[in-house]
Length: 159
Image 1 (cartoon, rainbow, N blue to C red):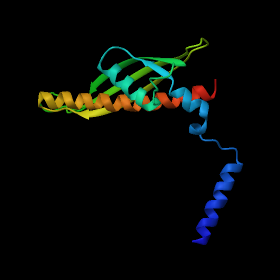
Image 2 (cartoon, one colour; image 1 turned 135 degrees about the vertical axis):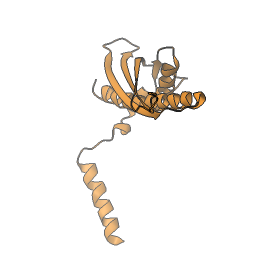
Image 3 (tube, rainbow, N blue to C red; image 1 turned 30 degrees about the vertical axis):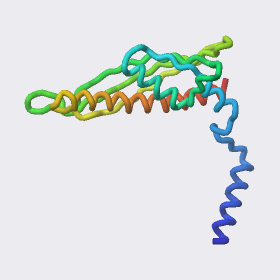
Image 4 (cartoon, rainbow, N blue to C red; image 1 turned 45 degrees about the horizontal axis):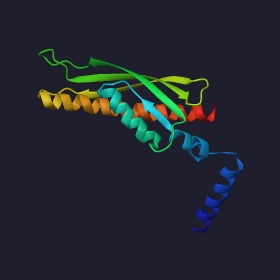
């Protein structure tokens, strides 16, 4: 027990002495992320991406936005497997999001692109097929929001 405690203390000292600073520890990045207003295209996938981004950024609706994030989303669905009657058994959904972060006070915008691929099973029942496709879109939007958030954190740390 004593060895474990000593190891923990030495590890903490070693990490603090190396100059390591977690990205989340930067007060400017955390507060800046909360003040990014998100705009997406007006369709189901755009709406889902906006919801996921607002959650990922912990958007503060009461504060004046410091930045405006605009996204453009393209999706492509491709059938993977085939049954004997030539209907698909699985689909691959590839979603590409191009984003631009513009400072509200003016300045040079920062942009980037992220691509996510998910798969989902094809169902024989119409409702199940729609639900599976929507679940694939939701998973793609969630992963895109996570990747875009990481890009934004990097952009705000290195202006």
